[in-house]
Each structure stands twice: as structure tokens, then as C-alpha cells.
Length: 469
Image 1 (tube, rainbow, N blue to C red):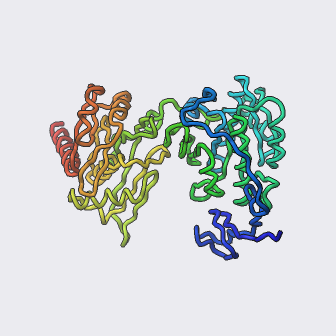
Image 2 (spheres, rainbow, N blue to C red):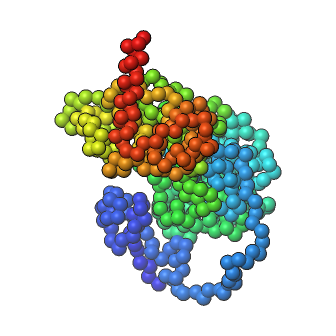
Image 3 (cartoon, rainbow, N blue to C red):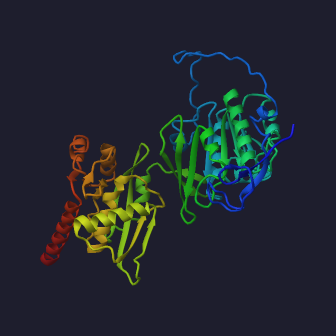
């Protein structure tokens, strides 16, 4: 039978019938390679139809065997992000930039599980066994019974794992280096990554072993390879951090067995990654409470409340088009808050350079940060220092109304635990939180103009205090 060639984009996985220099789906240049259309997993139908087998169907409520308990690694932050431990037979995809600490975190998790008597196998496709051992020695984990191998052939890996006791955890570092004989394509291509991942996922589902696939990331922070792999796995976890900081954020982007957007906070030390049990205190540790333009945001990351400092700087611009620079927040969200402050609060921000930064290297995505960002902008513009014992949270609408947000009670509890005495919240928040947070004063704002008036009163009180002194 004559096989028909197809052309596959190595960036997004789009298939075309002819070669072209630029992919029409993702816009990448020189990313299309020719591949055999009648090869790969699931391609037998192109070679000739085969009769399938009849399998048994079960009812939704039929429980043949009780579910196996989750497997705890012993790293509380890792277990939090995974939803309370690894589910047997699940497959996780861990992505992160080079040097961020993915291998260090996994070696620590493997060592702790091996100490519990579990069989743990670490397969490296990028490093030799001696290199992995050197890392373990630096972490003080060289005596743990973790099984190591340097291999890239999926068939050889699966054959080796099938011998002996079933492994509880298998780490594949990384999926981009794996290749399978069932695919006629070069290692690292979209077809090879998809075929290798599918074979490893089938092994996890049939044996009950937990498999962690390490994935590279692209320049824009997305996991390299076809997006279909992210749909195939049970959980996608991102390991984030900045090169100049020791803080690392482990974030669940997708999780079939637990909440998404859950985060774990780590700190890189000389002995590996250490857990941060109180992230709010860490993010506020270097805070300059006496400087204008800073506001504390009571946010939520998954089920965890976090207090984060938002810094703003409003300065006169010497450019024809004022500059807008944002770190850790959405640029479009900042533009919307600036427009609302100008239209409904009468503030003149359009001709100024505006810089906004989320301190600590954390990226905030929830709309509840609108009120804290607006307070920081107003403080920087007017020169009024916000009270160091106040926190802010609330969503700002285009009409200037401050809309209520979810999880008011955990936010107030976290602020109260760290010694904050006042919370500026949306209108409906006080009734929800006063019963459980009686020691914190809750001030509600229904419109952005009320926030501006409140900061103006702070300025007046500060002036009277200066005159009285």
C-alpha cells in the first residue's frame, strides 16, 4: 500500500497537505515538516481495517473495587497542588523554564516516596545517571533507594518497568526527548511527543502507576509540543519563578482530581527547595509601608488566601505617548482601571507614565485586585500614604461600581491573622465577614468615587496631624 505524506507543524500540530513556509494556524515560520500519514499510534486503519474486540459495559453506580488511597509525597506544598496527593494511575505534566528547579523538586519527591517503601523510577532523557546522582548528593538524598536510568526509547522503558514490582511513581524527564518505534518521525517532533505520551499514559492506566512527564516551555511560557498532550494528561502543573528571586510558585493549571489554580510556594535554598508555610508573610517581608503608591491586596490563589503588595508609580511623562509598564498583572486590566478612574473619579492619569508591579514575583489574575491597584494608583498620584494596617480587594466595573467578589471570609481571616486592622471591600462584604472577623474593621465602598474620597480624607487627617505637631 502506498503511504501518503502529510505536513505537520511542529509548533501547534496543524496538518496540511503541502509544505509552506509559514503555518496558517499559529503563524510560526519554518515549523512544518513532512511526516508519514500512515504511521503512528492509531494509524492501523490506514493500513487495513482490523476487527475490534467486544468489551464489557458497566453502570455508572457499579463499584467493582474501592478506589485506592492517594499517595502523599511528604512535600505538603506539592501535595496541595496535586489535590491531596497523587492518584494511582494518573499522569501529570510538569512544565517550567530551564533551571527553575523542576528536576530538584522531583528528586526530592522521589526520595521521600522511596523512603516510604514505594518503588520509584526516575528516567532521564537529558542527563546521564551520574549527573542525577550528583544532584542527589548535593541535596543529601544519595542514600535513598530511587531507581535511575538514562533512556529515551519508550519501548525499552515500558519493558523495563514491567519487570519486578509495579512502580508507584515514574518520572520521565523530559517527554520531548522520548521516541517510539511506532512513529516514523524524528525525536522531539509533534508526532513523536504525542505518540510517546500516549504510550506512557496507557502504561499508567493499565498498571496503576503514577507517571510524571516533564515538559519544556516556549519563550511565551507555554509548554512546548502539541497542546493535545495537555488534554491527554490528568493534571498540568506549571513551575514558575524569576531568575533573580529565590521564590518558586507551583501552580495547577489543570487537575481532574482536585481544584485548579491551586498554588504551592517554595524557596530555593542551598539544600534544595524548601516549603514556605506562610507565603503572605514572605511576600510582605520587605514591604515599605511608609511609601506612597503601595497597597496590600487580600487575594485568593485556589483555596489559599494570600496577602500581596501592589506597587504603583505615577510620574509625569516626557514622551508623546505615556508609557505603561506592568509586572505580574494584566496590562489590559490596568488600562481599564485607569479609564474608570479618569471617567468616574475625575483623576488625570492619561498624560502620566504609569508603572505597576506585584511584589514578590507572583502573577495575579483575579479581578478582585482591581481595588488594590486603584488604591495604589491614587496614592501615588496624590502622594498620600495608605495606612499600613489596611487591605483592599474588590472588582471594579466599567460604570465605576465596585462589585463583590467570592471568598470574602478567608481573605478577612488571613488579614486578621497577620495583624491588619482594616479592610476596604465591596458593599456586600461586611455582612459576610464581620461575624468571623470581629477584630478587623470592614469599610465598604460601592463606587470608585468613594475610594477616592476616603483617600482624600486620609490626606486631610495627615495634614491636620502635621499642623498639630
